[in-house]
Length: 346
Image (cartoon, rainbow, N blue to C red; front, side):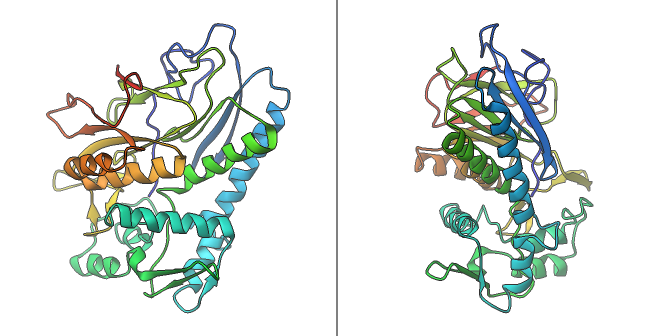
């Protein structure tokens, strides 16, 4: 499941933040950022570190190099990747995987249980059945959807913690990390910046739908301020979110969709019924890690408002800004678990 850019980029400080756009009143006039960007995972990743940190250029390139390495491990679009080899071999044998990847698979399985199946990485068969693997959306036949659904779900995946192996119980099942991979890459990159380069202030994003803040900008201890883009009006902001040592993930179905009988069917699929989710317009989640923010934003989008509200009620570490379906483009965002001052309407 691919993700799109959800942050305005034409308002304040455009010379510093052309990808993230508005960082409202985030910095005094003297603040400048070293910005390094690279194409990876079918989007643009960027690392921004305040000038004055001597090792910033090398640190940024090191972080982007790591993201390149992770793409080579996680993508389903390269036959030699570890995920592609896992998908090929796991239906017939136990497959040992790299330690951090195994931990990611365990975390994803945990979220599948936590969200009662609304988030699931074992959806490769469904993604292909609906044409989104090649970005050629189509409605599968009833038989095709049923067949793909039967090959979907982490309930058909055995994770052996002691041996660090993976086994699929269904032939044709495929893992696709598109709904969590960018966030995971940002988490690993930020970990490298903090631990190997002693970076204490910076902002990273992948395609602007996945954002991670290291600390806060110099002179602005309350955090980096991000403007959430409206899903259908690029020039319109939903509101402003502050991040400090937190991550933000946004999900909506506007990036990949196709029209069918007057409906827009998007790429965010409900693994439980094998169909595109249609209950909400956009969900942004604030969490401690970018992997969790990305994954939970997808899950809440699939769940719909009532179940998303229940989930946040029992997960106080998760904050959310949800744009429900409404008449035209006038629906007001709903906030869940956000302290005062973290989100303000635009």
